[in-house]
Image 1 (cartoon, helix red, strand yellow):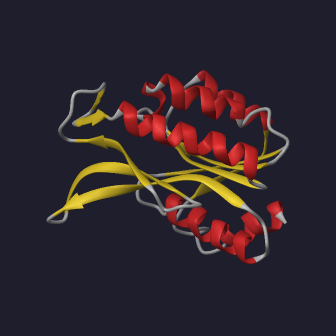
Image 2: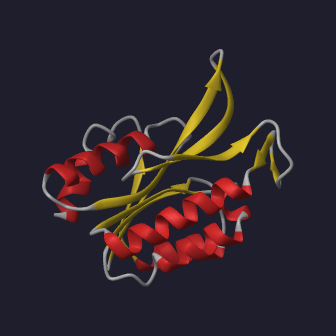
Length: 171
C-alpha cells in the first residue's frame, strides 16, 4: 500500500495536479481510477462542486447553492452525488492500479457512504493519492496521515514540480 496525500490552500492547483498525474500514469500503462472534484460556475460565479469519474468522465453533484442536503457554508451537500462518488471509488478499488480521491473535505464527510468508501483506501494494497482539505481536523484524516508515505503541501513554489514528484513515487 502506498498512500500519498496532497494538500494546500484553496485554488492552488490540487485537482489540476492529480488530473495531470492521472493522465501521465495512464500514458505509462497504469489503470487509474477514482474521482476528482471541480467547481460548478454560472456567469463566472461559483454555484457548487461536482465529482468527475476518472475512467468514464461521468459526473455527480457534490454540493450546490440550492438543495436540501446537509449545509456547509452556503452550499447544500448532495448525498446522491456523494453516493455516486462512493460507488466510483469502490469500482476503482476493484479494477484499478492507482486510486485517486479528490477530495476528502467537510462536504464529502457529510456522507456516510462516501466516508465508508474512503476508509477502504486505508487498507487496499494499491497506490492511492488523496487530496485533503488543508485545515480539516478529522480522525479519518489523521489515519491517512499515519499511513501515508508522503504528504505534499502544494503551493505556488512547488506546484510545477508536483507532477514529477507524484510520478516518481508511483512508478
